[in-house]
Length: 340
Image (cartoon, rainbow, N blue to C red; front, side):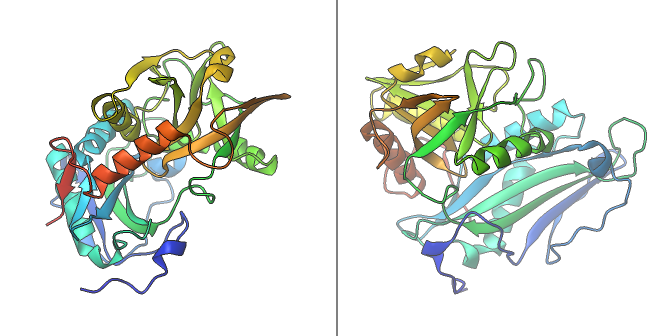
């Protein structure tokens, strides 16, 4: 197979249709065998539970071409586990972990000529998702479900790439205590749409949401966890209402075991923001995007790392994690899963 004729280095973070997608259906208490299909369209009942009550969860991971030309995925076992946690919270059947990993491998292999070449800066984004498909008019879980995986080649999540972002403290709340902020449910992202459109209109790249209970502590942004550097410390939020980012957890390991940083996962008061040296947003889509400035009303919090490039420690974190993903740096056991 040959690579598709795309300008890989110019890709944005938008959907491009690839050749195959994976689908498995749940009915009468069991998942079917699943299959790769050509059709990107879904035929759905007008009263499907996902349309009426937003019963849907999803995941995001990437496939890469490494320095030696091998196609791999990064820690898909953690995506499988997080999807299972999300599904259980919304009373959906869990798609088995081993089947999840196998399905990811199948769909990446089937679309291998869409995997961007090593060194292009692009990747193949893999989007597994699960939704209630049968008609439901009373408020209750569906009885039938579909698990699907689509793929699309993508470039950087933020248009500026590694150029530091300016973000704002959100005027809205993202997730309530004891709510669904810790799972990857579509409804959480729908609730952030008005806030992100408003932020973009005001010239900001993202919203930073405080905790909804007191609005005095940092939580996360609309699409990523947030990390800070203070001297030799890697500091991130410890909260039961934020999404347990696989990228953030991987960066914590890299910070401690590869770079020798002290890792702190704790409450971060908004009043502490001016004390940090560097700031970044982390997630599958962005890996790490540096933040140069946070605006809280009329207050501007400018980090010493500046607005021109990544701070030195975040740059090392980024280089190390992407080096592991691309095969330039030896990975911890189990992190890199070849697609064969």
